[in-house]
Length: 299
Image (tube, rainbow, N blue to C red):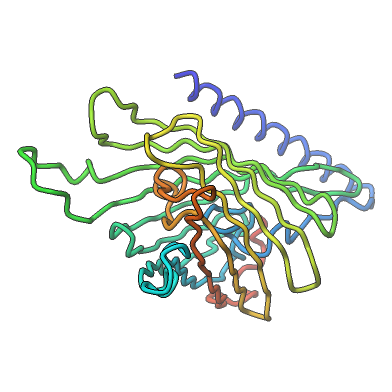
């Protein structure tokens, strides 16, 4: 209940700030004043590495995303340094409105299906009215379809579900550096024993550093406050390369999972033990709705 009350307070506070900003914008417009400049390209993609970034897919645009994760480099030449143990995720993200994105995906890792909704609550802006951060809310659902070992208990379909809730707080400090904090709550409908909790809290810390117009260095780390035994905090380092309608993301990580459940709470590799995995994301954007069909839609 305490977490729920905190989330409600944050949403009400941010909504009041946004309403106040809109009131100021209307007053300024009536007086022919320059209002604001909306900050864009805090990150180059809707995902930093595995985790969500504050960026949304444009309204009427669909992102087709292919993600590959290979095995640990430490496995040596017999497994071709992890290339023999590839897992992948195929996903489609669609911008319903400028501030609202939805997405679905399928991962070979544990045969998971996932879906999410991302809504931008507050936009970073400068000028007549300055708001130093952007804030978004993400709700995700993960459905694990891999068959479990035979037991005396026949699981319900809902036992295979887990959920994630995130508040993304990001700031583009300048043209070269962006940072993001991602308070996260992951809920398991079913856990291994009655002594285990169902809710797991964590905090994501991410960054983007611009090297050139089309190349960026990214980092992503999640601190787990509630830990499952035998797993490690995920750390990923990557390079984003933008080429027109494509974004190529190359990275090294200790995590093979690509949903919030698996890469935050169930990372089996450790950087200290050399369990590093190479991976990449390929993103291609397609315009589904024409710009004239979106006229008058501002949020």
